[in-house]
Image (cartoon, rainbow, N blue to C red):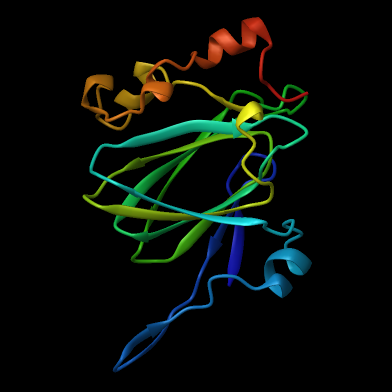
Length: 186
């Protein structure tokens, strides 16, 4: 396993490794020795799995303090584009977004620490995403934002092409959250 920084403070891209033989492959997907002790990623308390049709956009989500979650995101079937926005008011990269393609072809994972809005776009039919989280789900502390059309058009998508939950479709834009100061990290 090797890791690299993704350009915003705290985000890591973690490259997995597969051991192939005539039966298929084997891959170690988590090791406390590597993640907790070598990379300093906090312990995980819950695993989540989602399946999405083509053009489903899930996000941009986070949990507010004191239940802020870090996430280790891996696409285990199909492909996605992962989106992360720094929402930490005191960060030098506040408001900046990074995207990264993830797929079952390379078993690469993204570490998204607390203080980032996170979401993903399914770019294949039936994408399955696993994500480990560092805090339990706390519905009273969850928040979301909606990406602006100009951000989506970078990926040749128009908002009307996306399949969104009602909650995600009604979420405020990032600029609206900045003005209100609501839900952002200190």
